[in-house]
Image (cartoon, rainbow, N blue to C red; front, side, top):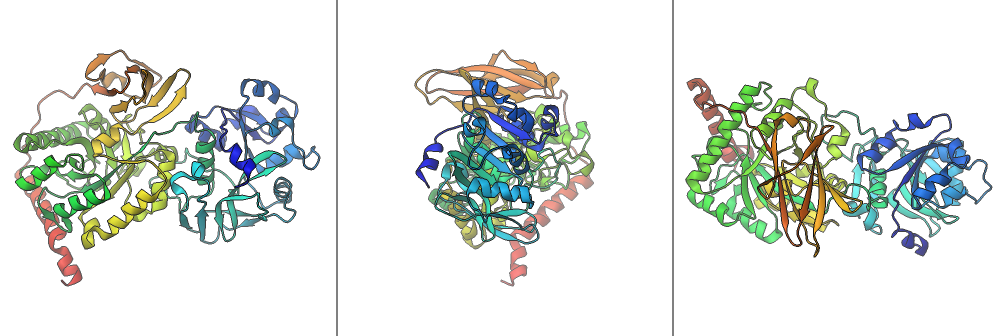
Length: 593
């Protein structure tokens, strides 16, 4: 990397000017997609039209924001630089820490701009959205690329829409490159540091979606700008101090062996690869446990744990929308897990994994009022499409809090690809891996290889039991003399590793203020305030101490009945036994062993 670029990397912007074409007024630019992304990351910004910038209105902004960056489209920048002589820039642009340019349309003015700011008289813009391409992420810029550093990603057709063809004269840094050209590159021109994103437009993070975000399908307009913003504004935007991780295996009873899963082998692999596993345990199985297997869990509580996986594990049981039915199911599930604790002294993580991933908006509210900390799920939208309000912003967040203000953390199967886990890491999401017993096929060789790849990425990966992982997954940012912490799960655990007292301002989205009973810190009730759908708490943490902040809600009163009809209970039993028969012996018929 050239010396001038290396020195610039240590500088961070504390404000951002978002320039728009002169035909668009200030009030309109606030609704543009770049502004939504900036607000999502908590980055302070001001929108200017080209005419406003050229009229000298930037001077007052520069006085209050001496360190700033500029985000602009290529057509807008071309219009801004039109009055300037070759090799010169407006004073305010030259003063910027860096300039992020996107939207290089295959038009003469954008092509001329690219040649002007790169110094390459033959630089060109190539459209590529009709074919798949392989993207290489540089290994020379870990501060920006983070866990995606050095990855090679096979994109599907349409995932990238354009590439920049620029001569490499030794000053160019390809951040995201392909055979066709550069999808994202950095370079300096006349002392100004530019970052050029070939994407034609940015994604609309308010767009609704029913599926997990996949960078192999939606790369352009997302990955470059996220990398840039998280790097350039790492001192002011929302960040996460660590990436919590957990392997979550659905369904197995606590037996020595279930299908391909051998708990002895699992523990050996966990000892070797240093990871933690939580079993999504079906409460219906609470009486069907093996004493030695339970003892293994108790003795290895940092590596093995159980959480709640539905109630009876019937299809769509938590896709129901009746509050009374949901409350009854949850009370039965909690009662069974408590019975497991009483019988075996094996505690459980108070986190829900929905059976088959199916849930309703009402299920999220029911979990909150029944004392659950969070849910973890593979599906990102309610089972009923008509009730889906999940947006891309929800998927980019640490957890989805769209439904009842209750956190639903997302998880991925390993076949989602290492690149999606890595992009989640840049966003600050936890690393939750989903699987069933068959993830241990061939003694877990495929899983072991994937875990090795995760460990090789450039991030701080902290393996924990699921309950501990969700409580430690939060966002922080500096806010004057304090630190603001965005809380997601109903319990937040945060440590003060410094030698001085630390004051934090905890904020949490809370749409059900009436249900909130109190807030406790280390089990002591503390003052809190709720305003505009947001809970706020001030917490002082002594040096070396840990604060456990919990939201306590009014639970639904009344008794419940665990006496379902005979036909229902028979159906549940048949379903469970057939599932176990399939998992334990189905592979013998499938492979002819």
